[in-house]
Length: 406
Image (cartoon, rainbow, N blue to C red):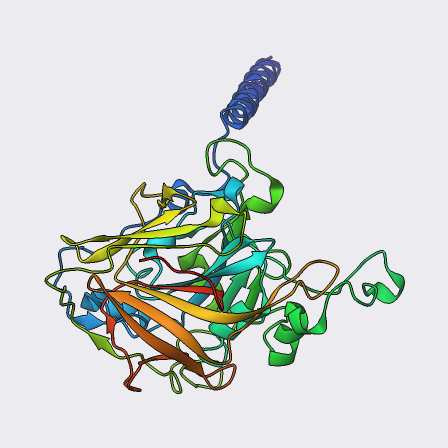
């Protein structure tokens, strides 16, 4: 009788536990369902918002090799374990504002297609204190590769696709002749350099770089954007992935990225008493006013505030206007459209005229770049190398003959 009683009690306990399990399962499912409805982030919240980790009040006595700006010792300890990220960030009207441009040490801007400009942002020292969200990541062009080549043999090049002749629906998998001109085939250039592979330093968000280094977020700006504007990356995770691939400060063979890196000349700021270049304006393409550029000099901060299409250019994450200590207008030879896809080609190797704005003044000079991997240098009319004011440098590559008003 006692055994029967225990058996009945055991069955009751099992029944209670079963109902309890079903309840908990239902509760978990409901939580997951409503979390989905509330659009809970698919990645950890600290990754979404960034991660401050260094006291900003520490003494700044370490010089950044990219732009000469001074940083704290803990920041230098971090960047000396890495090599620079060069990231292609788009500037399409529908993709604005960008995330992370305020943390870049150096930024290049040039037309990608049809008068629409694109940026190549260099992250190294300024990305040490926190995990920086960079977005939207977009496709590469050959002239961006030329600039990226200045940062060591195997710089980290973050992009999403690029000009190429690959075609899934074409005979032999290649586009018809004339669709993409050989001189603008970015994939071909990357393969030739040995950068494009499954674990290469050319980190393509569309093929060989995934979560958590990059992810898609069509709601980055609060409202839904087009699919092509949705790739965003996180600098800490990109640096970590690069190290796994053998692209830390030293490569897998023990070679430091900066062994042959040419550092620009940096100087302390000295505003001129009577600034004569306080407003700078120019356009990249006739009729594309949304991509016209303006820079306004601020005497108090001795820097230039950027305007993009007539509006103050802000970083989406900080809501603060983008500034530069140095604004360089580099006049380059423009060719194109060179193919049926209307790609443009800009000459970045050789020499040409340049305007360097700093301290509220302007220096008329020239730029020189001997070959693809050599550093572009800037000289005044007497042939003396121009020193950059310590801080952000912004290089605007516009066609020869373009008017710059200042």
